[in-house]
Amino acid sequence: MYKLFKTIFRKGMRQVYYKGRESLLGHHKRDIVVVHVDQACESLQDSRDQFEDSLHKFKTLLSLPDLSLEYRYQQLKKQYEFCRSKSDEVSHRIKLIEEVSEALFNEWEAELELYSNRSLRARSRQQLTKARRQYQKLISALSKAEARIHPVLGAFQDQVLFLKHNLNAQAIAALQHEFVEISIDISKLIAIMEKTINEASQFVSTLVEQKALPNPGS
Figure 1 (spheres, one colour):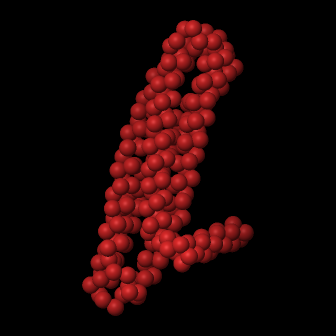
Figure 2: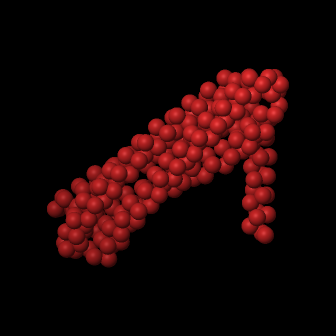
């Protein structure tokens, strides 16, 4: 019962928050969604770039013979923490998109009844259906990318922990073998991120199309 109340309370607070932004700052939910999607794309791109950079540094740190084992460990640990930070940002952006999109679609559905022009109401309903369909594709792509990040991070963390507790030449040799698997996983992750960014662009385009329709209250 407490969890249900907490969920209802949070939804109510979000509605108040978005209404306040709209009335005081002129930030419509549709515009806020677009901003959050753009920010999520930036987070994905940053995460993609970080994983690519870490992969390159991983390879370099394992292959250069003159580096101390402690230095390699510290540098790999730093790269892992960078990647984890970027992935946490992606997760945060996904939650923001889900929250404001839910508020947008609920408002959109309710305002369909305000139209006096049947043709415009029908067009708006079609756009709502299209936006919801595109949104589901986007969230599915984002969730897939997020899910793909976690095992890559887990594998990366395993290597860091293994090196931490086995600072010797045998540990480096073992990590060089695992590097191939990590490279494949990161390549797959990057491909999914690219696809997700494309889905985001299509979703934003759908919302921009709807913005051109007259407001039912005008």
